[in-house]
Length: 268
Image: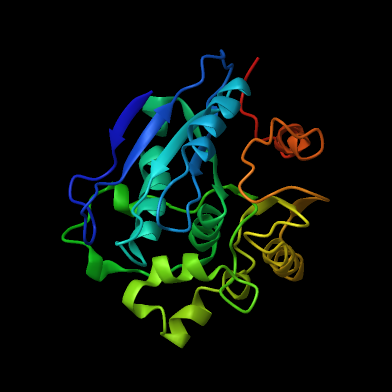
């Protein structure tokens, strides 16, 4: 694993510098590789290790390069985590030739609040120029991923949304009703949103499954391709779910989805 500093001059407040942890696959590829940037969950207060490194090893086994993004969380507030997510994709796409990565096959995966972050990445286009001391060539690179994978995601801050994530993300702006509504990402989906793979458990007591359902509905309404898997039982934050015969199928189903959409790269 290699530590990558994404920024020369970090945008916005920075008590903890955001980094990428790079896990290159050891599988030989015949063509430029697919890459996936991983955004662990943690209610915008922390970042769960098992939703980071564990996922990276899984993608490596598919011949896919993985990058775990250690994005800024509370006490940092919106939009700093979103700027980190954009920069992660931009950094990889800017360096794709050096890394032997296909710039048209860069995806993101987010769990729980990490799901809210990547859904924001895929649907919010604000400039945020005021947060930059200066911009560089990487900042001019396209930040939109080619696909996104959501694991039991937080999507909304409405009545069935995750209030802890809202409070940690917004800090002293948590009562700004206009901003709260703006960050209900089901209302941001549009015809530019990249294709998606979503999974959730039906009785998740941490993040209501309605989050995934309302997002999938918005994708359908906007003509965006999406595959959704709902499992009957399972607690929140299951990660790879290796101890569940039912929920643990999601990694196989994701692999099949990647193959179906020609997103596996050139792994032998």
